[in-house]
Amino acid sequence: MHSPVQLQEIIEKAIPKIDYPAHPANLYEPIRYIMSLGGKRIRPVMVLMASELFNADVNIALDAALAIETFHNFTLVHDDIMDNAPLRRGKQTIHEKWGINNAILSGDVMMVESNKHLSKVDINVLKPVLETFNATAQGVCEGQQLDMEFEERGDVSIEEYLEMIRLKTAVLLGGAMKLGAIVGGASEQNANLLYQFGENLGVAFQLQDDILDVYGNPEKFGKQVGGDIMANKKTFLHLKALTVAIDSEATVLVAEDLDPETKVKAVTSLYNKYNIKELATVEMEKNLSLAHKALAAINVADHKKENFRMLVQQILEREH
Amino acid sequence: MHSPVQLQEIIEKAIPKIDYPAHPANLYEPIRYIMSLGGKRIRPVMVLMASELFNADVNIALDAALAIETFHNFTLVHDDIMDNAPLRRGKQTIHEKWGINNAILSGDVMMVESNKHLSKVDINVLKPVLETFNATAQGVCEGQQLDMEFEERGDVSIEEYLEMIRLKTAVLLGGAMKLGAIVGGASEQNANLLYQFGENLGVAFQLQDDILDVYGNPEKFGKQVGGDIMANKKTFLHLKALTVAIDSEATVLVAEDLDPETKVKAVTSLYNKYNIKELATVEMEKNLSLAHKALAAINVADHKKENFRMLVQQILEREH
Image (cartoon, rainbow over all chains, first blue to last red):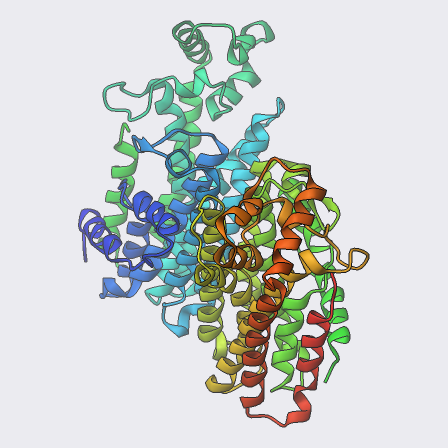
């Protein structure tokens, strides 16, 4: 069994070996570029880890892991176009570097590349693998659609927000876990429990991200602290504050005429007054507890699950 | 065995029955919209026809046919964004009606829907089906990339152009034929011959489109006659004329300061002077002959191939 760090190394070594065609260069160069930008490779590590829980040979899950990582990066390429984002992991986004049309098309090919990786899994698990992957991909697209629509709406409820982050972020972690489990030969029940583990962990992960945006250590948090507040982003904290603050106080949440520093300070005070951080933490821990419950129910020796608990710690202890 | 028209009816009936999710409505409504815009459904008809050549039950190939039609429409959605096209089949394009971001995302989900259809084929042919589909999808994206790049280049050769239309247009016809053959239980040799039939027919089809743009009957040709000339589009005729005309004559091909009528007239005269129509027709017929040769080599009773010859006629006798 490999540690999460060892699994990450396996992924890092496998990615440069993916054999993309040489031509047309401008179609494939962006793919090599985004795939090499790094990150913690959490999703493909999850695939390998889930597989290893049931099967000693980690290589059996490598294709599925690369499919998930390629798909994840495809969503980043297209999301960055939609969000008009100039930077990704501190580097120019593909549409900035190669133009929007090129970015759309390279993204499309990444979806195909992802399916090519996937089609290499053992024929005995191919049907459930495709079913899981397609349901996952569909959910992620639905989540992105809801996220875009929420930007234009003033009446997003907490429930809708939780459903959106479930689709946009958590389904992919659940899908990664389930794919790994299927490829590793898990029973349907164990595979579904790992899905639940991943999905609940994903929701917790996003809620923690919402919290860290406001309360993270500026020196450790990768993004600018207060970024969501400045962008009037409808995070859990924002939406929760809207439901509990009195109207005259709530205006600061959507105010656009304040300088950034004043705005972040005022919104943070409002959050503090209504214990929003604690309310978000309760919601996060609820999801975390559901994840651990699903993990506990998986029918394998408990010591084998240590890696999963390490992964949870690694993900949630991050300040970035 | 069904005639091409009957097969088209089967497709037309099957499309409204595809069960897309209801929510998010703005993600799935564009898919229903584009899929219902019609067209001749040539590609899915090809899937069914190829399958029926080897298997009596046409329904066996319906999922693969819907996968191909969904994929084709996905490429139209994304291509229309890239080409900034306002209309598709006389109706507003998706990005015009729902916005660019929505069009990117609905297109992405169409790719997933396409894979969902595909994953339903019999497990015994699933691997070759996926392999054929993914190679096809990849080729189409490469063709679109080359097409975009050619717009910016002044030194595109005839060989490069033929390779571009092979990828952008012909590979999908070949892929549709091969998918149908595989699903219908054809031998690998027969499936590959049908691929060659479809691919060569596709090149011939595009060359004829280039010819009809200049020499088509304005009352029957669906698009505006001379449209390619006005847009300085690098068609076979344009590129061929560049290679044979003397420099002072060739300037008219790329001139942007002429009124449309004068430009179309001048370029057509140039084409006439150098027998460009005949040269293009020779190239078209070369590909058509390769298609018929591949069809003839397929190891089934000749009378069963009548549908394919009808399809060729139907495609090539069109003036629109």
